[in-house]
Length: 67
Image (cartoon, rainbow, N blue to C red):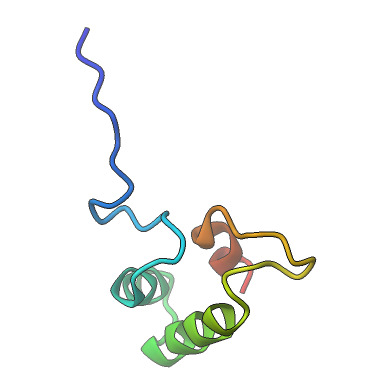
């Protein structure tokens, strides 16, 4: 059995902080605009990639899905 480890830095976009390009691609795939992606990215970048209660975000896609 060949088990492949997933490297989060290879474009899967789960690492925090994410690259803006990953955020933009995710938002466009969800039928949102690049401006929505930029607003999300700026908002969480200014907050230090922390959630509402101040805890670090572990998976930005989960947060973006609720945006």
